[in-house]
Length: 242
Image (cartoon, rainbow, N blue to C red; front, side, top):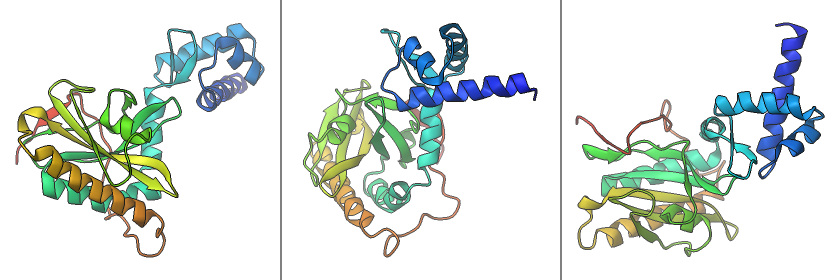
C-alpha cells in the first residue's frame, strides 16, 4: 500500500471514529474534528456511506450504519452479558418453543439485537442479530427505556411487524436497566393465556440474568464451546425442516 493510500485509510478511519463517537454530526463537524477540508471529508464520508459503515439522516447528520451495528453485535458476542444470558435464554426457548433475543440500547437511541436463541417451531422468527428497532412502538424498546418494572414484562402486538406479538422484560444491575430479553411470536400462535405464561417465563429468566451478572467470574456458567449466536436472514420468519 502506498503512502497516499495509507493516509486515505487513516483519514477514513478517523472520520468513522468521529461519527461513531458523536450523536449525529454534520459535514462541517466531521471535517473540523479530523482536521480535513470539507470537500475531502465529504468524499470519504460518501464512500463510507456507500459501504454501509455510516448513514446520513434527513437532517444531513451522519450516524453509524448497519455494517457498524453488525460489527458491534459481533464484538458484543464475547461480552459477559451475552454468555451469562445464554443459559436462561435457552430455558425460555425450552418452555415456549419461540425465538428469544437479547437486546441493548445502541448509541443512536435504538434497540440493538446482539444475540438470539432460535425457537423450535418449524416456522420461527430468525434472525435479527445486528439489526435495530425503534425504542418507541416496540416491547423491547419499552423494556430498555425503563417503562417496565424489573421482574415484570410488557406485551406489544404488531408494534414493529404486523402479525407479530412481542414480549419483553428488562435486565438490570445496580438499579439500572442494561439490556432486555425479547420473545417474538407469530400472532396466530398466541392463544388465551399464552402471553401471561410466556411473559412469566421471560421475566423469570431476565431476573435470573440480572442476579447472575453480579456473580460473573465465580458461579456464572461459561457458554458452550462452538455455540453461535449470530447470523443473518432475509425474512422475518423462516420455515425450517425438523
